[in-house]
Image 1 (cartoon, rainbow, N blue to C red):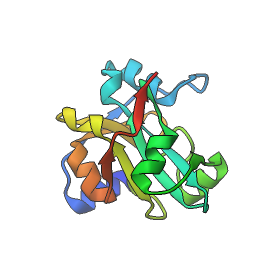
Image 2: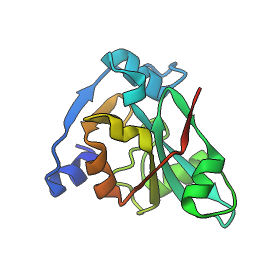
Image 3: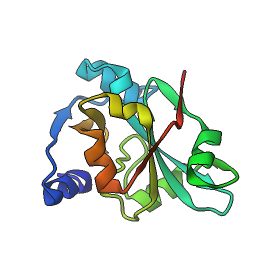
Image 4: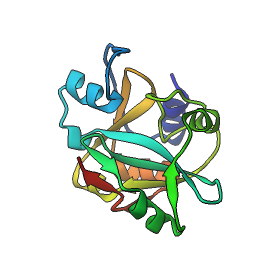
Length: 157
């Protein structure tokens, strides 16, 4: 059990857990999850934190086979500029370690944005809050639990 799965259980959201043996030498946590679980990388989403010019932290959920477009995230958030958040600040704010940050069950509720490509899948895979543990759920369920907005914030690699 992680804070992410506890939040889903409490909300009675349907999900499935998927475990794999995490390799500490993996270059991409999300890519490793897609590869080891035999999933389409466009259906596996990574959780990234960005910081606005005022220091507000934002959560961005984008496919692992692409990148976060900081300009599009800023536009979606209604701010002038965002940059990637300091990993230590991300860990402090979420309560999760980098590589296992889930958009669910974070210590602080942050504004969250999910790339609108998530809506094309019956389920997406996100970190369940630990390296080597993924959760599959409907994108709309993720959005309702995180009070997220869908926006075109990702771009292909």
